[in-house]
Amino acid sequence: MAASRRRKKLGQHFLIDPQVIDNIVTLIDPQANQTIIEIGPGLGALTHHLLDANAQLHAVEIDSNLVRKLQHKYSADALTLHHGDALEFDFSAVTSTNGKLRIVGNLPYSISTPLLLRLAEYSAIIEDMCFMVQYEVAARLTAECGSTNYSRLTVNVARKFSTESIFEVEPDAFSPPPEVRSSIIVMHPKPQTSIDPVHETVFSDLVRMAFGNRRKTLRNSLRSITDEAMFQKAGIDAGLRAQNLSIKDFSALAECIISNASNKKENQLGTYD
Ligand code: SAM
Image 1 (tube, rainbow, N blue to C red):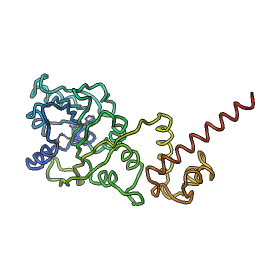
Image 2: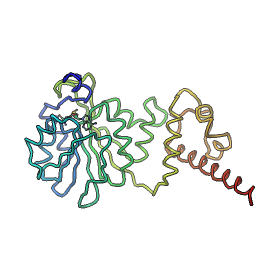
Image 3: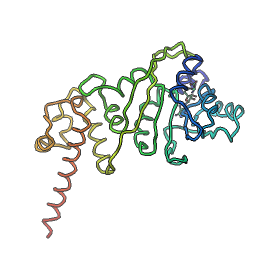
């Protein structure tokens, strides 16, 4: 692949505006006793400042040329570099003194949605996250129920994290400049009661199917896994659309689907008594 196409594919827009870099680092406020993971360090625009704070710093970078440059620039004692894809990185394998990780980065736009969905699975070991994302992604993450931006991403991520959009960054802060505006977001995990893995699976299937066609009513989009009785039990109008359901509504509907399936199973077993 030609170098310029590869750079584009990997979202390599490097931060060059010292004021923007300073604002991001001030917001992160790295401390010596913390374990911080930077996604996509690139040429080290943020890395450099994060290292100044003497935090336990890890960085995950997919591009071998950049990994070589970073290895040349920083000692392995100061920076633990992981050469690989952040979408496959096992965040739980990184140890920290307080068991919590801070995750930061100027995210490549092409991976921000799948990465955020993946990080939702690690919410229990995350202290907080600070990311640069495309403006539209920030709008989806902070969207209110019922709005156009309220989406599958909103529901799956907002279930685990509260997200705040802090400031916007214009394209001229990067080299080369991207075609879109960016936003800096800060995310904090919500307190979780232990979540059953069956509920997790049903919840995410339900959300995927409901948002699969936003224009369909829930009655139609969820026809294969629900019936009127379940909607009634969950207190949800089946004539609504996915964007009208809160996280609590999706959770209630997931519970009805699970209890309906286990009742069916019990009834089937009962016939053999
Ligand atoms: N942090 C640097 C900065 O602010 O100047 C670079 C940010 S640049 C927007 C995104 C970085 O993520 C690039 O260095 C790119 O090579 C890297 N990257 C792209 N896809 C990746 C992936 N799947 N896993 C890890 N790093 C990735």
